Image (tube, rainbow over all chains, first blue to last red; front, side, top):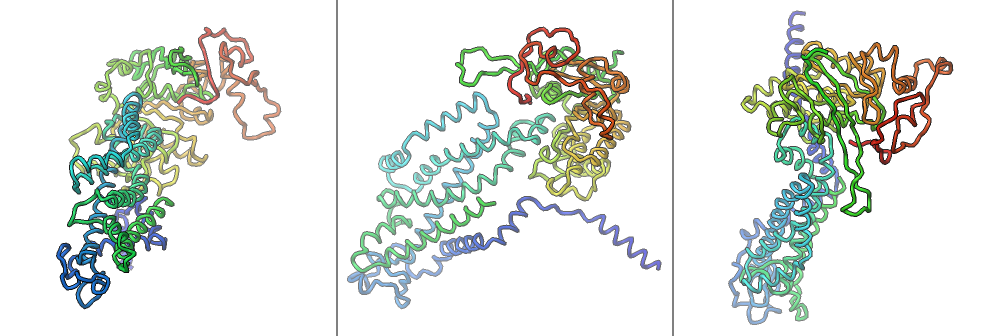
Length: 302
Length: 314
C-alpha cells in the first residue's frame, strides 16, 4: 500500500512538473501539410530538383565548358544521350556536355528565383508593414512611390540596364529583386491595415509597446502566412522572367548558362534531329515551376 | 468628494471629424461629439461602472484616458500629472499603472505568441532589467493566481476556451501591478456561467490588490453586481452618477429610468405588469436628441450634438 501511494505521488509530481508543449499554428499546418498528397508530391519534386542541382556536379563526367572533339563532327549521330561516353543528356550544338550544363542552368535559375524572391520578401514586407502601420501621410507618400515605380515598364528597364552595363548575373539578381518587391509591399500593406485594428495590437499600444516592436512582434509574424504564399508564387515568376531575358540573349553570360538560355539554344536546333537539347532543360524547367506552383496552391488553401 | 482621488477626470471631450463621403477637401468636416464633457472621480479600491447603449461613448471615454484617441479636458492622476497633457514619453511612466482588459478574449491575444510571452509583454516593456527566469517565474505565479495552470505557459491562445482566454487577458493586465484597470466589456463575449466566474475573479483580485476598476458594460445586472458607483452615459454625456444601490433602487434621471425599465426580468409573466418607458423616436436626430428620445421632460440640449449614421465610433 505504502509503495503504491509513493508511486502515485511521484507520478503526480512528474505529471505536474512536465511543462505542456503548445502546438503552434505552424505545427497544425505541418500536420495538415503532410496529410495532403498534392503538397507531398510538390515537396518531393522540389527535393528532386534541389538534389539534381546540388549533387549533379558530382555525377557529371564532363566540365561545363569543355568541347568533346570526338562528337563535335556530327552531333546528330555521335552527340545523342549515351552512358558510354559520359554525355548522359547528350551534348549541345558545340559538343559541350548537356548534363553538366543543365545542372548549372538549374542552379542558376533556382538561385535567381530564390534570391529574387528573398529580396522581394524582405524589402516588401518591411516596407509594406511600416507603411500600413504608420498610416496617414507617411503611408500616402510610401504607397504613391510604389505606384510610380510600378508605372515604369520593368522588363524594358531591366533590358536597358543589361544592355548599358553589360550582361552580368549580379545585375540580373539586383534588377529582378528590386523591382519585384513592389507588389509584395502592396499586399503586405493591405494585410497590415486589417491587422492594425485587431485588439491584440491595441492591447500592445495601450500598454506602451514601441511601434517598431509592435511591427516586429505582432504584425510581421501574423503576416507570414500571406507572405509565404506570395513568395512561393514569386519564385517561379522570377525563374520565368530570368528565362525570358536569357531567351532574348541578355541574361547570363557564356560559358555560364541558365535553363532559359539552354531552352533557347535547344529550340533553335530542334529541326535538325537533336531534340534532346530542348527536352532535358525543358523537363527540369517544367518540374521546377510545377513543384513551386503545386506548393503555392497548397499553401494558399490553408 | 475628498482630494485623494486616484483619477479625477474633468470635462473630457472627444470629437471625431467626419468628412462627408464625396465631399471636397476644403469642406468643413462635421463634428461628432463622441464624448461630450464627461467628469468623474475614481478612488483606489473603487469600481466605477459605466453603462449606456451601444455607441454612447463608453469605450471612447476609456480610450481617451489611455490616450488612444485624442481628447481635451483633464484627467489628473494621483494629483501628480494630467494624463491628457503629458508627452508620449512622459505618459510611458503611467502606462504600467493603467492596464486594460478587452471585450473579445481571443482577439485580444496574438495567435502566434505563446501564453507566457503574451502575459510577460507589459512586464518586459516596463521593467527592462528583469531576467528571463524571473519573468517566467512571475508569469507562472500570475497564471496560478488567475486560475490557469502554470504548466500551460507554452501553449497558444487558440488552445484555450473563451473564459480561459479572458483569464490570460487579466493576467496580462495584472503582471505590472497596476493601480487602475479599465475593463472594456470584459464579459460581453462570454456565456453566463463564465461571466460570473470572471466577474468574481475580478472582484477577488480587486479586494486583494486594492485595484480601482473602470467597468464598462451594457449588461446592467453585471454592473450592479460589481460596481460601487455607476455612471450612465447617453450620447457622450453623463446622465447620472450615483452609488450602485441608489441608482438601481431609485433612478433619478429619465434616461436611467428608461434604461432600467428595459432590463429583462427572469420571470417573464411579471414583465407584463411592469411599467416600461419606451423611447419615442427611433432615428437619431441631429439636434436636441435627448429631448426627442426620452419621453419625460428634460433640459434642452445645447444644440451642438450631432450623430451621423448608426454605427458606434470606436
